[in-house]
Amino acid sequence: MPLTFRKSFKIFPGVRLNINRKSMSVTTGGDKGPRYTHSTTGRRTTSMNLPGPFGWRKTRKAR
Image 1: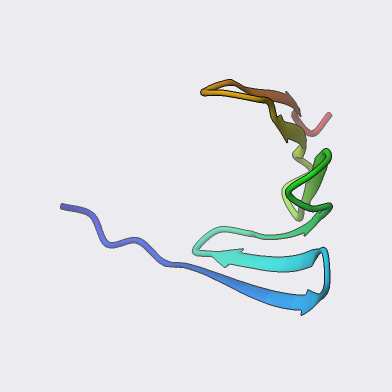
Image 2: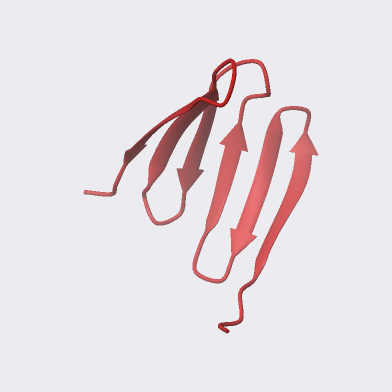
């Protein structure tokens, strides 16, 4: 089983700093709306929880 590392820190209300082995990212937004994640690798993700067992996610990779 591979070793993994992931840590998340709450900086301000609605803003989180996420750190893993290869990159860092900042997530803004909350539970009741869209969340935007920007990674140091250039990846950008927009996600939102929808009612019921549904969720929505769109990811754009670095150019």
